[in-house]
Every structure is written in C-alpha cells, then in structure tokens.
Figure 1: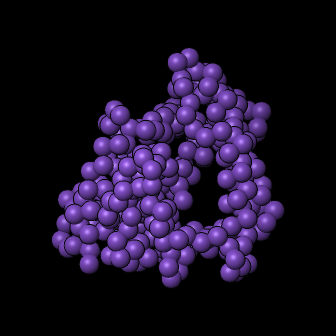
Figure 2: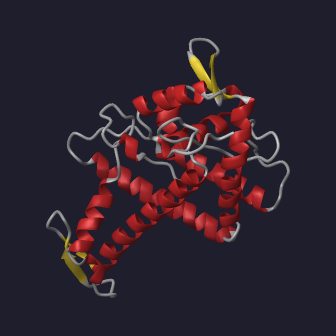
Length: 265
C-alpha cells in the first residue's frame, strides 16, 4: 500500500517524515510553465523547470508522470477510507496496528512506518481507544505501551482493510513474474538514486532504511506476492487476519470512527 503524509500532518513541525511531497508542488509549477507540452523525442529539450534549469523532454515527462501516478494512487486510498467513513490518518494507523497482529505496535513505530506525525498518531490512537477499537497494553521489557486491536477493531479492519488488501493483491496478479521483478528493480534503483541525490543537499540528514534492508524487504514482498498469486496456503499471513488474511487502516475528524451522520458499528 502507498503510505505517505496526510493532510493533517502538513503543519505538524515534529512529524517523523517531511510533510507532503516537494515534487508535487514542483510538478504543478512545471505543468503551468508548459512542461506537459514538451516534444516526444527523448533528446528534445524541455522548458526550464521551477529551479530555472533546462531538462530533456523525456525527463520532464517522466517527472510529471511519476508525480501524477503518486498523487492518483494516494487519492484512491483516500477515497477508500472516506467511503468507509474513516479519516485518512486513522485509516493508516488502523492499518499499521492490524499488520502488527498479536504482538502490537508502539506509537513511535506507527509514526515511522506510516510517515505520520507524533501528535496525529497520539490523538488518533486515543480516539480509537475511546471508541473501543484499540487498546493500549504494556509491552515486553521497556517497550512501553503497545497498540492492539480489540475484537471490535479486528472486525472493523476485516470489513475495511482486508477488502482493500485483497484488491491490491488482485491488481498485482495482473502482472507476470518478469513484470513484477522489473517493477521492483526499477523502484529500487529510483529510490536509491533519490537517496543519493538527496544526501548531496547541504544540511539534509536522511533517516530512511538502508538500501540493503529495503532490497531484502522488496524481495520478501515479491515472494509473498507470488505465493498469494498462486494461492499458496503457506504464504506469510498477518497474525491479526484471523479469517481472511490481509492488512489495515482507519477513522474521521470528529470521532475516529464516526462519519458526520453516523457512527461505525
């Protein structure tokens, strides 16, 4: 699932991840400056980008297209959450807790995994707790309080999160093994290239996981996708998915699980 900052995180100074995607604003500016009309030739020079530099037409088109894909995918997830009467931030939090299964998850780990600010996570967790969806329990050792789904929370996740994950898996099944491997390879290369060039920006300190760890995670994800596509019963399943296997998220502004007119039962 695509994970990213929610609108409520945009002004949170202490968030774990940078609020929003700088590229989105840059792409909008590029479109307004005429980048969408660059020549189709890979060697054609496009108009100056927002920084004033001139970029090849193929780079300008790729920049705009990737950003468009990113925004469209995120809007799809927002639509799913809204359709269930759940806010985007709470949906992501419910998703993370559901994936953690029986072991639970700390608020810090939710911040890191879902790129949501500390204040947003804390307030949403307590709303979910008051609504009987989440319970906080002491973790082993010095881990502090860990968030777990209550029976009501698990039922909610199976009704909202699991169908979404099944749809994600169905989408991946439309690609063969070669296409999946190529997508992971290119995604890995692009992420590594971003990390390398971002690291060159004066004053920037990157905290994302290492390339090796991310590559291993990508390989594990591919194995899981292949197994799921083949209907392999031995494929890794979430501890919290007692009946259908999947992952989760969930809830809106007023009360994490309540829409303006009705409360989720």
